[in-house]
Length: 327
Image (cartoon, rainbow, N blue to C red; front, side):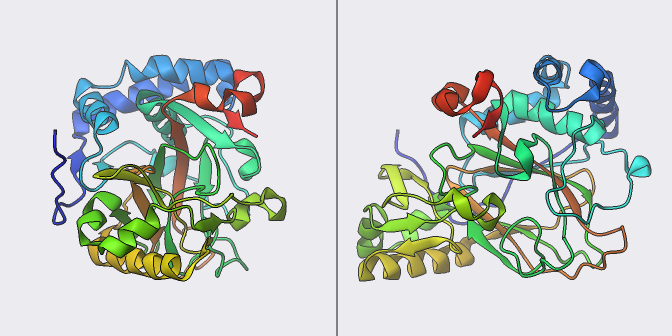
């Protein structure tokens, strides 16, 4: 079957109705006390996997379809999920913030992760927590990562890593004050027909190096020479971080610039509100964020982040005790 590339498509939106949101919240609350509410424990994750079956079929169906085929944008937005806003504490303001105790939003995130594959984390980043906070941190405004607030450039999540996530999940608990922090996504499926033949050839060649993001620390290293595009010529995967990927040749540099320009041209921007969950197919879609100005007043933008691996066994050698954390 020939892939039909649509450069005009927008991110699909699935709105969860009030009754369905109540059902999801009930399933989440049943999960929170399991295993003492320890989100990172294998017992709690096993319960979350069972809890996936308790979610409404109206939610499970579009998620199953998205896992099979993430479409021309490689993204999906779920709206109206329960996050228990009334119980939210002040937005964390410390680097490395993560959620280790179960609450409604953590349960929702991990149940959906279990439906897409398996939840996963990387030990050097936030200690390998399965549910991580994405919040602005004082003094790290210019940081190219989850703690910053300047423009976050397009990137494949953990592009340097041999076991990068298949899906990235971003659940909004609290929007920024001015509602200007936009999640930007751009899919290689929409960019591909706009690339020049020379640019495409270069991007399929092993003429790039990618360093680890700052959140992994200076010892994380980087890649061997790799291609930015791999796999099927008509529907490739993409692996790039415009803040960390370096071209090794002149033509590779030109191709990287061309790809960045096309991603800017075809980008989608979503302004997340509480209860919005953005899903990004990390194999074909890059993401970033527009700049915003935090106030550090306890009411700043707060997202919960999770990663999904669709084939956990591929990383078995680097996951101690067959757990969910990649070393």
